[in-house]
Image (tube, one colour):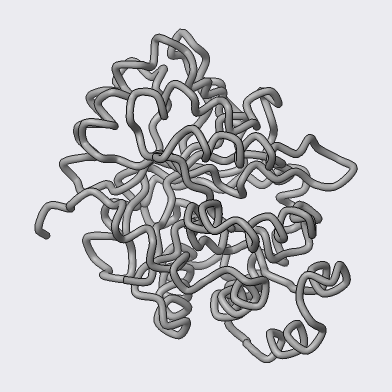
Length: 327
C-alpha cells in the first residue's frame, strides 16, 4: 500500500466542520500559492471550501497512483497547566473532522492532534483511538509541546500500547508563529522513543539555510539508537532551502538511514525541483520533466524519485500502522 504520510487539510468552518483559517504573516503571503497548488481559485475560500478542497485532494491522490494519504488534524497551543494559548495559530482542524473524512473516503487515513497538557488529553486520546486514528500529528515548537516533560509520560505510554504513531514537526517552521524554538530538534522525542512510541520526525530535522538551525545530524544519530524512529521527506522537494546536497548524499549512501525514510508531500505546500537541480541534486532534465505534471502530488512523487528516494519509502508506512476498527 502506497501512502503519503503528511497531507494537510484546511477548512473555513462555513459548513459546520469546526475548522477555522486565520492566516498570519508568511501564511497570508503564501495563501495564493497554496491554493494554486490544489488547483483552486481564491474565490474557493468564500464558497463551500471544505468540500472543494477535499474533492481536489481526493483527485490528486487517485491521479498520483497512491492508495491513501494521511490527513492531519491541527491542535491549538496550550500552556503546561492545560490552559489554551489563544489567538496564536494560523488554522485549526478538529479531530472529529479528519476522523469523519477517513470514515467517508477510502483515500484518507486520519491523524489526530492532541496537546498532552489538555485536562481531557487521555480521554480524547481514547476517543480518537476508538474512532480509528492511525497517527498523532504535532508541531512542538508552535504548539508548546515538550514531549520530554515527565508529566506527559502516561499519555505516551498509552500511545505506545495502542500503536499510535507520533508524527512531529522538526526543523524550520516559517508559516506559523513559533512559541518554543528549542523544540525544533528531534531530541524532543527522546522520552516518546524511550517508552516505545513509533515516531516520525517530519522533514528529518532540516533547517532553512542561513535562517534556522539544522538538526539533520541529530536525526541521523538518533536513528542509530532508536529502531522506532523514522523521518519523512515532506517539504524536501520545494523552494524552502532546507535540504542540502550532503544530506541527500548521506541518505543515498547509508542503506540503514534510507530504510528509515517515509514518503510525505506536505500538500498544499507546492513542490519544485528548481533548487535541487541548481544544487546538482537532480538533473535539469528531471526538473523540466516534473513541470509537465499538472497535479502537485504527482509532481512531488516524481521529484522524490529523481532525488533518489526509493519506491519503498512510499510503502514503508503501511507496515507501521496500527490496525483500524472496521467501518
